[in-house]
Length: 433
Image (cartoon, rainbow, N blue to C red; front, side, top):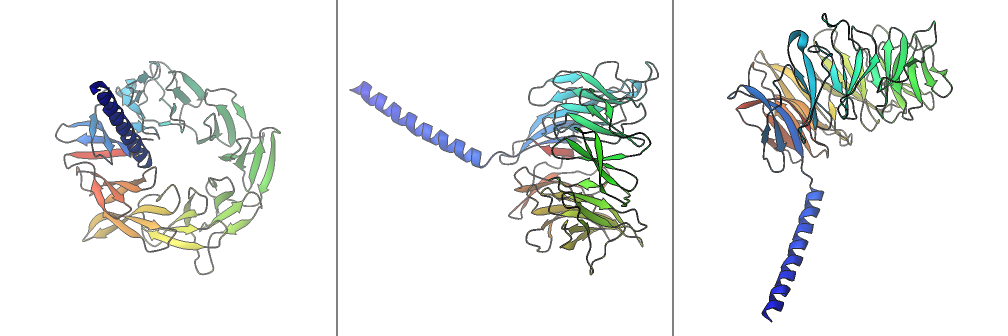
């Protein structure tokens, strides 16, 4: 009898524990942990390290780099892998490091003198595009290369020892288009199938890969043309329209944002399906001196930056691509504003002077409501939305030399909280995805 009672109680406890665990898992799934990896400099220890920060539990974990660092690290978009520069002078090189596994992959020894030129992660978070300087000991090894983290292999993409050429990767990161003095080359991520898609006697620059990956857009002297890989033919889609910078394709592949080559450049949007060309201004709001255009993630807004001729400063505008609505965003924005993933909010830092002291202030504008922008925090810079758009993380930058740069975040409820203390300075950060 006693044995049966014990078994019965054990089963009841097991059932209750199971229900509790299932509930905990469900709650955890509904409120996923938001984690950040930040590069931090400690003044008390006089060294750099990584900090893993859990915004929900606020349990920072310090992780030391596996090598002595030279120059700045580069973090992959998913926050899991790092390019670590090592060595010095002509022996400068780099290695790749995966935070969660501790795996490191070294660049082969013949690639040296890589201390000052370009390297970056591709969007696949696996390959690194890099270039080394000409090596006076071993001859020229410059050009464009990819370095595969999974295999450690290096693939030469394009042989130009002086600089990494202007380029754009396809959405699947399998091919790259390279501009070189009026010619456009296509090559695979492993250096395979290098071909040119521009005819002899004409000069083009690459504009964008179309979403299907089977055709691309090129810019001629006064044309925008579509090149189709299956036919090898060019089709003019916009003629007699000169631009002073590369057109920008909308994320959905439906529109091009263009800036004219006039003395006071203006912005237009061109619909690829209908050939509709819309000036991005109204009779009440004329916009010229345009120097930059970009898109919201949902392709519903064109962002426009203009310069002020009479003094230092800028204006940023938002415009619908069909020209139906154009509005001023703000004046004197420090860097390109950052959209939330759902395109309902945009955040930016505004610079100003107070009693001859330069300062900046972080603000958020809810585009969907068109209410006035909401100030977030003075001296807030380098904002980044969390993957679920619930919080805005930023670095507090008082702009004093050697000052502490704390990592803070702003919630939808309007509160500001800090994740680091006054003993360290945040260099950069990214969300772990």
